[in-house]
Image (cartoon, rainbow, N blue to C red; front, side, top):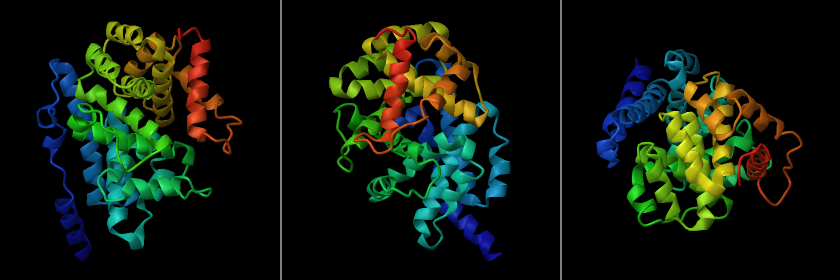
Length: 327
């Protein structure tokens, strides 16, 4: 009885209103009704997973509930659940193993989205991102697949754009809490948020990126590629326009799409949107794109000046440049 009361109190205390994911609340201007509905549904699915996790963190129960979400949207539910479990870990320092057990257990195949969801929590607790970056740089990481741990910083950047776009787009501020390579990964997440802020309006996204300093544009385009390949919501003609407008940054866009293909392949939730993005932007299937990301992990150096994650990204970009993607 006491345990049930605690769960109910926790669910009320940490509840996030569904209005927080509406375009109107966020100040996003999305004229296309289909895109608006799709992108808002993604937000609602995220919150579904989040609220499940804070209501009941028992992994067997959580797995059953998350896996009833329709396949193409399931990753977003796992993303939200990761945020919820990270939040519970933060407030119960005597039991900080929920997120770790989640990522290494029922969410192992959704680990891309799990880390991204973790970034949402890092953006909401004091000092969260700094502590996370310190742990990320430790030689013996406690979380599974630490290479992908940088995706939490991507999630941190996405959260900044999604919830505070007035601060990070106009003017184009940078977060004061991080520095070095983390700022680049922040921009990758910020670029991903543009897909939602502008309702997958390709010309508007490209125009916005063009207002940024050139040193930031490649990472922003990479984030757009990940959003295009994973969230989708656009037709073939729009993706062809995206390819044209990316210009010199097309390999960076392609790398983001390849990440999306790998995330969906690993989770077993492929979509026609991901396949079309790979065909148009990479000239290959989503399965082949995922295989390329795996191949380039072989013999990846972990003791170089650059983080292995960035070396991996650069190898993928070079791979797509040699596949006939114009530079």
